[in-house]
Length: 271
Ligand SMILES: [Ca+2]
Ligand SMILES: [Ca+2]
Ligand SMILES: [Ca+2]
Image (cartoon, rainbow, N blue to C red; front, side, top):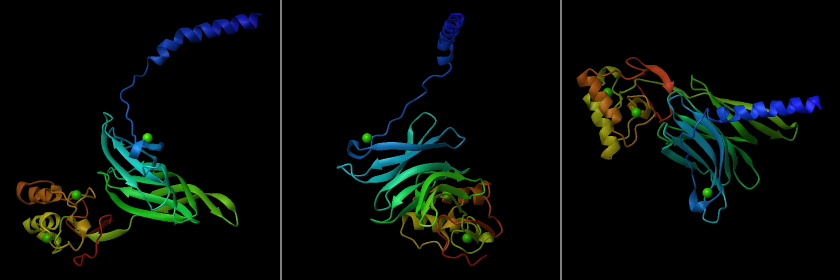
């Protein structure tokens, strides 16, 4: 009987404290995504970037008949407003399972894909900070479950690897960025000492007037944000540096140096 009384007192005290505990948080915002034709949409993983933005990825049907899944990845700003949305369709079924964000806001998503009727594996996708797909890498017989982005640019994917010998195993796959040597900002490829008006013009012509393709797209990324297409920001960056005392391009500049090549560099003969 004593025990029963003590238990009742304990419950009463708990009850008294519950309202205080539940008032410690408030709903700041909610966001909802309903995909194609009110289809089936399942979030699977979350990440944040330290700047208040939050990222979610998951599976989303891609047709009116609700057959076939793609990855859907969404960035929300600190107010819960959608900043961008990217779908990945590897051709068949794609189920997202993990997401990570690196220090410059690039986003990595991994999951499972069916390559054809009988074979499957992981598909890992890198998006720029504005949600543009930069690359896709696939690995057979791997069912990805999580992903980690290291500050240095390395990516780790963890999942289950299936094989005839050992059935199903823990598996970690490390991706390292492909490094190339170039001078940032030298869009026309005539050398870092010649980073000038002509580089900005070369880039603007390429982007907006059907001009020649730069020899090294990564060199045109003067502000180093992994974006050049359809933008004026890199040309403005070059002009501000050249004429208005703006900041120099981030490394590699002014000397040749190695950096990740996410944009495509056919060749940079100056280095
Ligand atoms: Ca839906
Ligand atoms: Ca130049
Ligand atoms: Ca850029």
